[in-house]
Image (tube, rainbow, N blue to C red; front, side):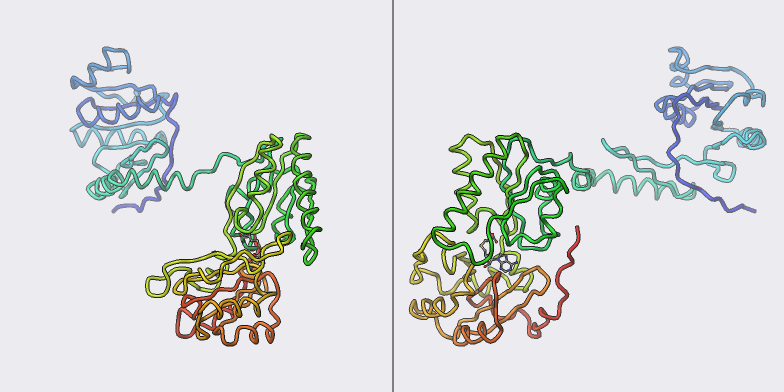
Length: 429
Ligand code: SAH
C-alpha cells in the first residue's frame, strides 16, 4: 500500500553537500549535471560509465567508483540518487539510505523516494519548480512549456513587482510634486517616496493633512496660502514668498518638496515656480499628479470623453487664480459638443452660466459639480444649465469643487444617484 507522502517544496542549497549517485547511464548523467551545477561533491558508483559521466570523471569533476554498489558507500553522504536500470538494485539503495535517514531519490519510482526533483524553469531572476509528485511528468512538462512561452510576460510582471530602488528627495533640489486631488491613495509612487524623504515641504492649503503628514516628523512644513486670502496683491506677495522659500531651503542644502494639489502644471503655477528656479540656478524636477478634472471625474463616474457624447475636453479656470484680475477664457470659442472641466468655478457659477448661455450653450446642457472629489464628504450634484445657479446655491456648494459641462456630465447609468451613497475613498497609505 502506498503511504501518503507529505511533500514540502524546498530549495535545498547543494553547495558542499556530498551526493552519492548509483548508476552512470543517461538518467544518472542528468542528475549528476544538476548536482554539479548546484555545487555538490559527487561520488558515482557504477559498473559501466556512459561517455558523458566518464568524461566528467576524467576531468576530475566527480569521484568515480567502478564496480558493484556496496552499502558502505553511504557513509558520510548527505544525499543519495539511485538511477540504474536495475530496479531491484535501485530498491536496495533506497532501503539502505532510508535506514540511515539519508534523503534518497530513485529515478522513475516515486514510492521509493523520500524527495523528488521538480521540473525547473529558470528565469534570470527566478526559479520555478513544478511537481506532480512524481505521478505525471508529462503535466510538469506542459506547465514548464506554458511558463517558457510566457517568459516575456513574466519578466514584465516581475518588473512591476520589483521593489523600486528607494525613491528619495535630493539635497539641494526642489521637487515640484503633484499631490493628486486629495485621497492619499492617489499619490504617485514617486510623489510618496519624495514626500517621505523630504527635509522641507512647502504645500498648498488644498493638500490634505493626511498627505502632508507623510513627510518625516522633523521635516519643515510650510503652508503659505490660506483659503480666501489669495487674491490680488496679497497673492503676488505670497507667490514671491514661496519662490524665495523654495530657493533658500534648497540652497541651504535641504531636499525640498513643493507639494501642489492635483497636477503642478494645471492651474497650479508650477510653470512660474519652475521658471523662477531655473532663473536662480536651483535644480528642480516636476512630478506630475492626478489633476482634479481627472480625479473628480473618476470619482463621479463621469467620462471626460466618450465615443457617443464628447470627443474633447477643455480645462478652464472659472476665475483665474489670484493676481490676475481679468478672466482670460474666451467663452465663445469653447466647443459646445465637448466636455468643459471648470476649476475654481463654484464661487462664480452665476457668471459662468451667463457666459455659457451668451456663448450659445443651450439651457438643457448638462452640468455636474463634484465637491471634495475623492475626499471625505464628496458630493456630486447634477442638473442642466437652466438650474445651475439654484442647485449650487441650495446645496451650498463650497470649494474645492469641479464643475463639468456637457453631455458627459449627465449620469452615465440609469440609476446613478449612487455616487453620494458611496463611502469616500479610503484614507490610508
Ligand atoms: N493643480 C490643481 C488645481 C489647482 S486650482 C489640479 O491639477 O487639480 C484649485 C481648484 O482645483 C479648486 O478650486 C477646484 O476647482 C479644483 N480641485 C482641486 N481639488 C479638488 C477636489 N478634491 N475636489 C474638487 N475640486 C478640486
